[in-house]
Image (cartoon, rainbow, N blue to C red; front, side):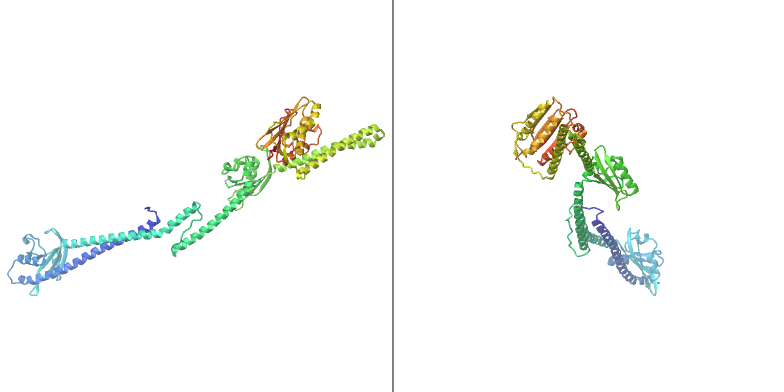
Length: 587
């Protein structure tokens, strides 16, 4: 395809123009050379012929000779020579003319060739003849007789023949120049195409590499500079491929680390826009990676404390760190903003460490210590008071001493139960309690626990019902441990349901699991306590008034989780609660 900006034509066109100019100049030079050669030859020929005429006719013009008419002689010699012959007197009068009527001709004394002949040498001139109406070459020589010049003999030929010869030669030269130019043009185009071909191949390979084909290479076909260029390019491509492969692998590893990193990572550029954000940071900031990229940090962070830390880092070019609690998401973050040396000014790395779980664990630990201290303080204080009472004289009163001893025994039983449940919970959490899992009918784990607590329900004036469909599939469970879970849940439901209320136990089959629900119409659980109801020793305010160790739900939770199940609660304060746990279906 012809394209004037192509390197192929940028190389070929100057060569073509140079060749055309050279051939044109050569043609013009040869044309002038041939014309000059023709004219010189013709002039020499006419000079010789004029001398011949002069030698023959000069005696007739010698002094003392009678005047003669030279028209006949001029015509005879004109026929012999094939030229125009003119005899001119010393005064310029035409004495003889071969082609025209001499009586009608002007005086020729001032003709250039005549003047040159009168000066002693042959004269010549090329001019347009008004007499014959075309260009003529005139050659004139003196006619000597008796040692003196007696006249001028002039021979002339029309230049049409020379012009015809020159024209034929010019056409021949033009045709040769055209053929040579075409051949040279083809050769120039071929050489330019051959020269530009490696560049086109290099361009194609670069485009393939740009499209992602890093294995594209040039094939060196010559041992010259082009071959050296191809080898150097291939070496560069190999190194580039290795570098890109290494960077891609490192980027993949970095992406894998960032994607699976629990801490949020955000990188902003000098304009304050997000260049990188990992999924953890997007989750903590309540956005997604796709919409966050390219937006300003302030639009994504949406918290003035985090934005202030980032602005201080940019302004001071120093690391900033501070804890930040996001009330809208109930998150507790440790935010670190650090400048990036060597990068664009203003580039910052923001790290969001989610310490919500750590803080929650600290809260649980603190509450656990507070709760266990509270649970232990009551029986210990009671025992201390009873011991002091016995020491102060109650031993002397046997009935009172016996009553105090019975009370001490109950307190010791409560402490013993608390320690036993703590030990059991610790063993379950550490995996030291083996679960004997086997296909078990749901009725075998629900009915014994419910029947065991039915007398308590009757004494409290509560309605206790069980609804188990006959087509329930068996569950994979340790029957004794699951009975303990059902007993715990039903016992709590009975304890926090006022007289006249109802407690129901139901079961339904779902996708690969059976869900057992214990529903009551009791006091319910406050919304702020729902998230912590399964913690050890955690009790809602109403639960604290009713006894118990506060470990039952924690034990139930770990037993269910040990069966690869799940347990949860739904409750509204004053409207009752529903505890559910799911167990996998056997097989």
